[in-house]
Length: 293
Image 1 (cartoon, helix red, strand yellow):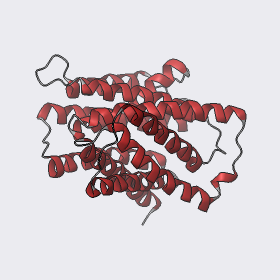
Image 2: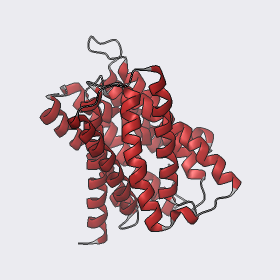
Image 3: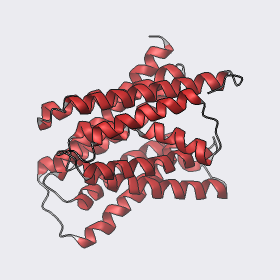
C-alpha cells in the first residue's frame, strides 16, 4: 500500500474505534448512571494506556514547567468534554451527536483566528459560515424536535476548542501516550468523585463487557490516530477523520434503530464539506505563505 493509503486506512480505523466507543458507552448509559460508568471504563483504559507507556518508554519524559501547566489545562478541558458529551450521547441519537462534534475543527480555526491571531482569508471564512449553518440545521433551534442535549454537545465543542488550542502550544518532545495517560487518570478521577453523589449500580456482566470494549476501542482509536499522522500526506489523510460520521450512522441504525432525518443529513454534509475544505485550504496556505485566505 502507498503511504497515503496506509494513512487513510489508519485514520478510518481510528474513527471506527471512536464510534465503537461511543456506541458501547451509549448502550451502558441507557441503563446505568454516568459517573460509575466513567470510573469503570477509566480504570480499564488507564491500565491499557499505562501498559503502552511502559512499553514505549514514555514514562522517562520530564517536561518543562510550561508543558506541565499546559497539560493540566488540557486535562481540565478533556474532563469537561467527556462529561458534557457523554451526558448528551445517552439521550440523543449517536449520529446527531457525532455530526455536531464534527464542528470542532471549524471552531478551532475560528478560535485560532480570534485568540492566536492566525490569518483566515475570505474563503475559509465563507466555509466557516457554511459549516456553522450546517450545525444549525442539525440542532434546529425552535423546531418541534429540538433537543436541549444538542446544546451540551455544542458546549463540548467549546471545550474541545480549548483542548486543541492548548495542545498546539505543547512542545514536540511531549510524548502523546504520556499526555493520554494523564488525561485518562484525570477522567477516571472525575468518575471516582462523581460516584460519591449516586448509589453504586449493579453492573451486569454484559455491561462490564461493554465498558471493557469501550476502553479497548478508545486505546485502539488513539494508537491508530497517532499512526495516521505519521504516514502519508496530512492533507490527504486528515479528511478521513470524517468517516466517524459514517460509522456513527451505521451503528445508530443497526444497534439503536436511529434513522436521522433528511435535514440532519444535509446539515452533516455541510459540516463535513466545509471542514474538509477548511483543512485543505489551511494546508495550501501553509505550503505557500503568499496565498491569501
